[in-house]
Length: 582
Image: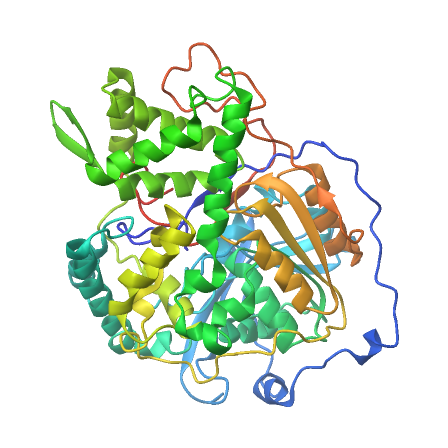
């Protein structure tokens, strides 16, 4: 998402506090040894050559922007099969390499989402990328079509019309027949808006179109081959490019992976909701269970929720909130915290490198408030009021439309929105607490609701043997892009290498010297880490004592200075405890 989603349905600003502290020795990288089999790598297809190669390379009229960057906008074909037809405008931003004489080329970035602004991500690159990359690469962000500073998708004629629809979806996720019916009704109206008012751009926003745009921009900046670093949904874009243009990149690193077969709904899986294919909820539940287990083991000096049996106490608290919301009152009114709010806040906290401390703190605070704790209630009120101060009604915010256009256009989804209650309930059985939270995010994609299609969307294959190796990175406790998807993605690409990290949160870059150095080295040299390499993160939960005066407040003691990855985005539910920003 564009670091914000509609003020109701913010899809994801996950905090990834990446700290570069060495906890493990780096294993020397190794390059792939050329073999006869590698020489048989795939080439760009005739269809893609026909679409792209006859187009004139665009001239980017760079101008100074934001004090430290250069910006440009360029018109590209809305449909690459009709190069002389309608156009759409895309925005490009670059931060020039510090050492132009030793510049390797451009490093294209994508933060995820879908719907995240790559130009905004590139602008902040000096705050999170390693100095070695900033020295040798121009950092380039291309906002995907319909998104960010590019020509925007708009599914409604006014903010008023948009608000009327999104009001029905203003919950972390619906629970119970009444809420579900209201949510489905609004989702249908939302899908109709994007299939009519927003149709012209929505029908041309598949990931394949973005990969084609990136290939054109690769030529426009003068690079012979693409160098790319993508996070979260950006891993899908990287894998699409690798399969569509397998001979046109020098390095593609993808961190926090989506298995593209699950993303598109290959085969019979297209009859399932997206989370049943991707199993994001399984990753989130696995992480939550491990946090409660480690909390119990660490004890009360290290974990604020360690008293008694953390898992048993959490189960009881969640059951209590599901039966009856927690209501907190002050002189200005009353505030209701629902079960969905609670789960949404936990899911948001699982995105952090410090997920253990943040999750335990939220559970402890809500538990104390539910038992009448005055200090905990005051702390929750402070969080709620701060969250409600975030956001605005104007101008038009298309973030949810941008996210949905990509998800709904890329994949195959169940036909009827009315099937979502049963499907999400089943997911919640298999992945407690988070099955509904993840499952409901795509109900607007039901095929009899979202009727606009992109005839040039790419459906595979996703197992091309690329001319250069792809680096696939995954971390054990990712609550959004399940680690299993990084494993399966690496197995899918014949010329790839899997790098594993034991960090918490969403994606691995910046969470420790080992993972960061390995990714940097690959981007700079093309050399991949040793096979089976597992990196240790800079931080593990509950390794520092809780300060005596912390009380009910969320401890940030574990956070140490250093370069931090800004929000790596992926869809997440809204929560009253954190507004739309989880």
